[in-house]
Amino acid sequence: MSDNPHNNWPAVTKVAQPWVTNPDQRSASGNRPNLADRMLKEVTVETPGLIADKTLNLPAGLDDVVERAVASIARVEARSEHLGGLELLLVRSEAVASSKIERVYSSMDDLARASIGAGATASARATIAASQALSALASSWADGDLTHEGILGAHEQLMAGDLLEGEYAGRYRPMQNWIGGSDSSPRGAVHVPPPSEHVRPLMDDVLEFARRTDMSAITQAALVHGQFEAIHPFTDGNGRIGRALIGAMFRRRGLTATATVPVAAAMLADVESYFTHLASYRAGNPVALVEYVAHCAIAAADAALESADRLAMLPTQWQERVTARRGSTTHALLAALLHAPVLDITRAEAATGSSRRRTYEAIENLSAAGILEELTGSPRWRVWVATDVMAELSELEERIGRRVAPSTRWL
Image (cartoon, rainbow, N blue to C red; front, side, top):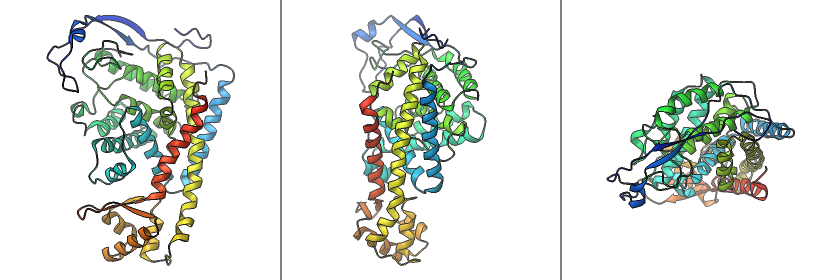
């Protein structure tokens, strides 16, 4: 239990269990277990307590931080409702950052190609899958009951294309997993989650807790995230789904209706601090995680408002760089770029409603003005991007990082 007098939140229960390493089981790198892995005879698993009916009393001062986070998110939501293109940018930013936390890296060019199904790296495809999963989870939790199917469906979208873990996509893990340590055994692991037979009951409990409405949405989202990560219910993809749950809780509780606050980008700015706060949660100190998530939300939301201002100015700036008569194909394509900053010829034609020849002429006009840039000259699959929008995606992550970096350890 935590020594914090303001809460009775359960710490994980640690139990030593026998362990046998399969000597023929190959790791993801293709290697068999080494001698130390084969000699491992016991492992300490950590099972979180039930939280469905638990109450967390926040210490004096933290309520104000939580309310600041709520107000910051509300401002982003207000801008997102009236500025086309902002939500796409925010979803992509959240997915990119959440993937980077898991060491899944992609260039902006690869992400652009992957977003429209053009040839791209496996990492880029995985990042696009992450954006689809977090959108699906937020949508499913916004309108319907909080169900296992919503979480499992998002996980299937995330992991179905994974060569190693695809067979487990969309279902809870049937085996023991662990965080850190060896690839072949839990030797030296940072956290060994509960055995697989405990996963479903613990997830039942998390969903019951998530259905409550008697606490701040920020507090609830942080606690759902911490509990989910302690359970680690999947063979892989736990971090990305767990962070998507934060946004899903915001949507469920009405903090957002269209906006995605890129909280993961704030976590990415200091991954060590993020993992430290998750460890504090497992140790029975959830207050630290609540304050951490609140500060991350503030940093992400305030930076997102700057992106909203920048995106709002782009159409005027573009009009100054190219002559586009109202009603022309070039004007129609220009008007579509905030909503569709990555284009192939099929998408460009749909945006303009014009012939292929006129659409190509519009693309050439915008390319000559430096508004569009072609990523590949392949005649089979030509892809163009609105460079200013893609640049803003990178700059948003950097701005959030600058806001977080000076003070990442708030407790």
